[in-house]
Image (cartoon, rainbow, N blue to C red):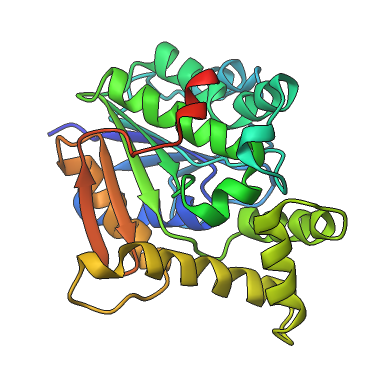
Length: 275
């Protein structure tokens, strides 16, 4: 039996590490290649490609490294984790320039990698970008997640989305820092509500921000489940990717201990269609 090869873009973060764990469980003989922006080897990977950033030249850089290390171009699955864009303002207010910049990190390099490597499966990560609190501050990241959903439904036999609840990560920490600055000069009613709640919370903003997101997730989904809500952790991401590798559904959602599959786009405000 041949050895399956997997490529993970961004293996050192929470999503990347959870992906490695899922692959090790489902395919113990796998050869895992992962990229990182750092010069530190990624834990539990077979091969780390160093200094790789999500940008237009990413595919050629990875192809060069595949050649240098004598690796075949065939990969079982491509897992793409980068999530970086302009946030701290309502999604609806995203400009074309902001959207282009965010897609240049969060989506375009993945599509290029998919085209060049032709994996059996390509998997990206998403969020609940249409909930009231995320609509108010997710900025152009919300458009990137929307576009990723559309991308998955274009070819559901070979594309998957793992939609996950809010979990602590470098990306979430970055969002919280930007959002804290934005709140000081906003007139948006939802952001003003968030600001008022924070000022009366006596918490550090990072702790408050996570609790605020978890509260909205619980309010939105608890009625659909008999088990109580809990925040999402790395093990839940591992469960989500494991399911995505096995299922025929284009979207696998993990929210704490809850798991479900989605066969159609979420119900979104009509203005998303303008983007």
